[in-house]
Length: 499
Ligand SMILES: *Cc1c(COP(=O)(O)O)cnc(C)c1O
Image (cartoon, rainbow, N blue to C red; front, side, top):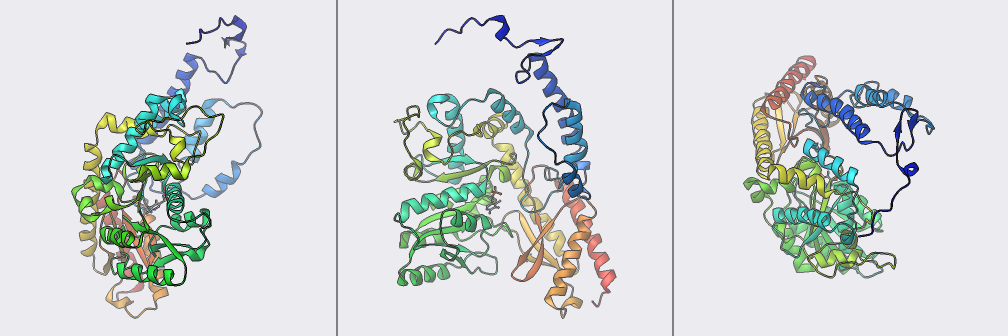
């Protein structure tokens, strides 16, 4: 250890009455004041989440425009900044952390993870290379190993935390390309169902493939890929001189939560020498439940899997993950040596994250997973996911009991898709039926207790209930169903029972 040099008093930060000499280095008392001032606002905000409106974006665009400003030369006192955030900017949004957020794929926002982020950011240790913080790198490696355990991967699996599922899908796709295609890869073709998340298409473009190299395959009546169509497409492309290299399976689509027949896809990929990737960004953590393991049987046969801890593990946004069964493949795809780098570990058990991922300097994301899981154990996460599955089943039965409601996608995990389609609307043009269902959605959301979103299933507009938030419980589902019933009644009264 180098001895700490004896600093001249003038080099020390002073919190003098006439002003702070080093404003970038708050004193201990100042640090406490900063955190306590923020904490007071944070705690009352989080405690009021259930009573906040599910969305409040009236006037939010005007507010956004009014906030544009040039680079400030001098500072503003913290209370004014906290007021701007907590009184004006934060409320003018979808209440994405609240229990009524049943839209898109809900995120999380575990408070324990926020505490971990404060620690990680404040200590700012470097976890891009093992040598710089071996023990902290190991904690992040533990997190990856836990995720590998959840999906049923062997010890040789490796992976890393990303900012989200989109980046993880992109890295998976590049890894598959590096493993299965020559340097000139433009004849490579990848296969996914038409229900696959658009981040896969985007990943293909970013990885250098022309849009035409992505095959979007048909699905069955439950929105799962049709394996025979996949096999036919592979054979036909190969006959054309193209190079099929990747199959993407879904473990929970964004539209309906559909789970492709993963074991069958694995067998086809194996038979034809293709990389098999599973996008489990939404569905993956349901593997903690018995039901989820049954539905996603075969997922452990995938060469790579994307998970989004900021969905099913209830973490704050900015936490995705990629796992690769053969960890060495990840290393082959990402290792580029440089003379100025510190030594890289030879021991295969010790992970240099920069060697297996696109990032070098990176946030210490591992801590926001590690701290909550160590603190609480995995049991409450499993229980919360079981609760989400049960709430979705309950909502589906309650929807079925509403006259005129048609279930368009029975839940495979925690999403149910439906529409209003009373017998009297049978002869309406499809566009008019869709318009009325969009209006139904607006009327449900206008009550501001829940926020639902819709999608197109084929050319049919569907409303979705997606239950992922750890804050959503039975009381909120009952409010949701009450608001749906009331909105349905308004629609049928308005259009008259005979359309
Ligand atoms: C959310 C989602 C993604 C994209 O993940 P981000 O974390 O939003 O980047 C990809 N695939 C599926 C199935 C998803 O639900």
